Image 1 (cartoon, rainbow, N blue to C red):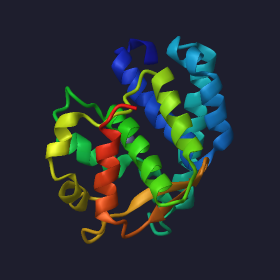
Image 2: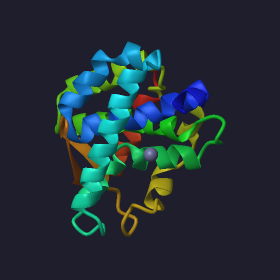
Image 3: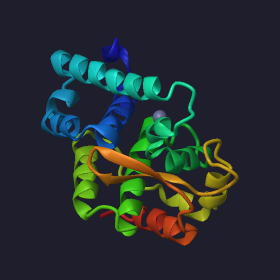
Length: 196
Ligand SMILES: [Zn+2]
């Protein structure tokens, strides 16, 4: 079934799979790094393994927090606060969900680094994995002219207009961080719009 998808949609799905590695399973992230070429070739054994594993990880989180009471489930939102703002502010053809998430994860890791939560290695690994997998790493330039902070405040997952982000504290572990300084968020978006 995955082989019937346009390549772009396939890559979008892969971005969401990598998210599970970053938020809760460093070993899985290692595996995805090693398997990038097999993933690009749509190798059946690798694909079935990563689909099964990411479904298992998601089920674990949802089971632990079935009614969204403990906050555990929020970790699934990694990269998505940025992504939703990017998606809302551009048209669907330009940026599909998985692509927006890919860029959002780059921004989130960059923000975590700026806050001193992680060193630059997670950032570098995530970025180089996106390049191997053909996913975007840069915020489209036209989004810089838009007040993305206001868009984020209106996000359905933001509470009372406060800026909160799911940020890594190491590979395989994330935390919900409240009241992030908005100037820092703007700076991160600006810096991620510049190709490095
Ligand atoms: Zn998503």
